[in-house]
Amino acid sequence: MVERILEVERLSVDIQVPAGMLRAVQGIDFHVDRGETLCIVGESGCGKSITALSLMNLLPSSAIRSANKLELDGQDIRNLDERKMSDLRGDRIAMIFQEPMTSLNPAYTIGNQLEEAMLRHRNVSRSEARDRAVFLLEKVGITGARGRLKQYPHQLSGGLRQRVMIAMSLMCGPDLIIADEPTTALDVTIQAQILHLLADLQREFNMSLILITHDLGIVARVADRVAVMYAGEFVETGSADEVFNRPSHPYTQGLLNCIPIPGKTKRGAHLGAIPGIVPSLIGYMEGCHFASRCQFAQDDCLRGDIAFRDAAKGGHEYRCVLSPAETARNIKKASAA
Image (spheres, rainbow, N blue to C red):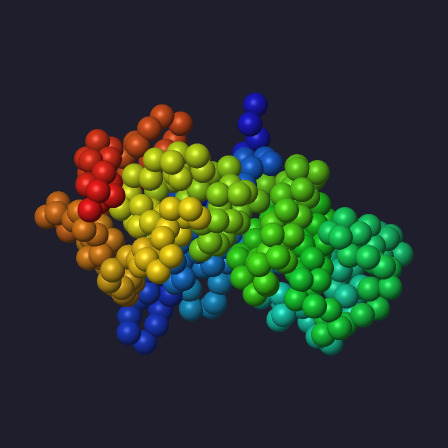
């Protein structure tokens, strides 16, 4: 039987700003099973990082989080106070933040920062925590691990700092790790190493992983399931195979068309692009959030809430008024043009 680690229903995050109420996340549903990788993908500003921070309850004080269900391994975490939530962070749920250059405290050694989580959540001695830190630094591919414990973050490269962040997230053996664009600040060769490392560690420790990214190449390599996010809501969800091979929402199709294909994209040819700009998320938005940028938009797209519909069996869903057959015809016409 599949073990469900995280279950989320109707998660919303509203943030009060001078111009009004910013509806950053708007009623999203998703789940993560034991050992599974869920990738949340979308443009910058669509709500991916706010979704991650809401799961950790690390939102700014001006933000209001609500959900019909928010369960971690069967435990309701919606209304936990800060003390109880801090008991979970770093223990049963951990996060790898986006910027390795600033995620580590420059005033403390690597060893101090690695040992802190285990000393906080486990009844162990400092020497036991240090041994665990050395073990995990070696696991993430850092040589001379014991000597690294005395170093400060500024003495490490960006790739090494990110490996330290991964080791830190593993100190207490969490059920779920959230990785918020963990390779954004790294060069391409280091990106590949970090992704392979995460995948290997996930298999070894049987962890669940939520990977947040805007890079569809990363998604194609590591995802079991994909949630495509646009303007605060999910517009398509399903297995990586279904979403990549049978994209059903016009936004997903647009994202995939922006990826140059070796051997098919001609030198000097224009790269794909999605026209228009992301709409403002301040206030209530009726209809499809993508309608103003969609070449297939019609009158029905501008009215009411657009419900999810099945694109195929196995949980592949998309938020659009067009049927799968209509979507397929539109894709064919667009490709021919």
